[in-house]
Image 1 (tube, rainbow, N blue to C red):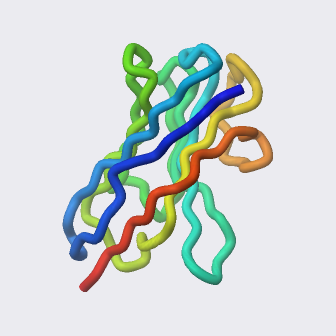
Image 2: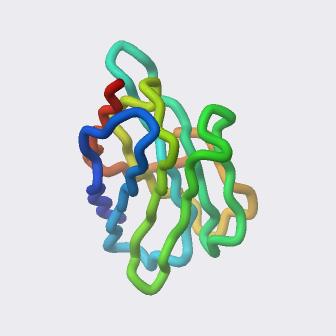
Length: 127
């Protein structure tokens, strides 16, 4: 079992930066991959970024590549998403998620591979 709690969302202007955090508890943190997903009103949930259990591999959606950075601090049991050059279309509720499988070799972008989800944190980008 994994409990995930996101924080760091807020209202920012286009071009600003924001860092999301996700504190995890339960299962040994450095044994599973983690991901960020987002969902805008009226839209389906979409993949944003993922990181392997070791932190050595990352994967990004094309829409955020070069602007967002996913990282993890295994000593603090915390996942991060650094978001730079924010755009209006980044407005959404952001969710962190934990992989159900331990030590997965590949980094997954499929929501079905993530069995544990946080409650979400809202990011609103204004012009």
